[in-house]
Image 1: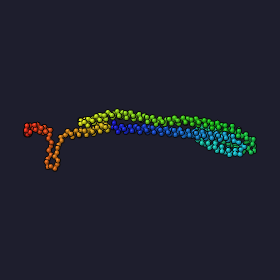
Image 2: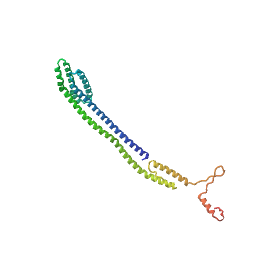
Image 3: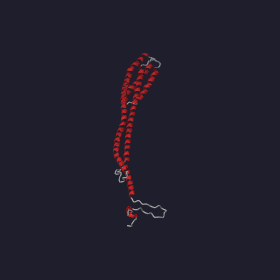
Image 4: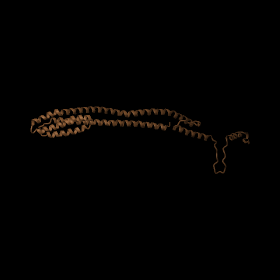
Length: 289
């Protein structure tokens, strides 16, 4: 496999590991966001239920003789109706039917009877004063009991959501670390194997290059593999072969142009040897062959 392809696969593995880590992190963050929204809804509902209970209890302790009693009843009615509308949207169908019967209907009956007590107070004060106590036990007790039940359920849900959020926060850390650790281990093993294969080849290339520098042109670089180093070896071997052919070919000497004399070849090895042999004859004269 070519080195460039190996490096590409390594980069692709790193990209896949990062993409997996980012995808898992995004999924965990989306899940965590929904958990935070659910916890926020639970807290808001707990606050609204607490406001309903507080308004109901405050109204039950209101003084029927006070001139502000009608205004207090109207303010309590507005608050209870508004908070109930917000709470009912977050309840399931079965819980909504039960809570509507216990909270909204009982509050409507209590408000109607309390308003009747205010109306008859002017003509029959004794009868009017007995009404708040009787309607408290008849309507407000079941109302507050249902509110307490909803508060307990939502409080348990809020605690469970808090534990789930803590677990998700810990999961986000490992969902990011695990892909990176696995990819890092694979990359480390790959680099070790790549180095183990590459070092002997580079060592062999270095030894051959030293012998070539010493003048041994018979040396050739390994070029059997199909990668960039083998391609470089083949190109280098071609250059060494061309240089070896140039050095082994006969060398011709030419006379510079412009002298009007033809070019003469240099003496061959045989002519030179004969010249040396004849030059050793006494008297220094050359005899024809």
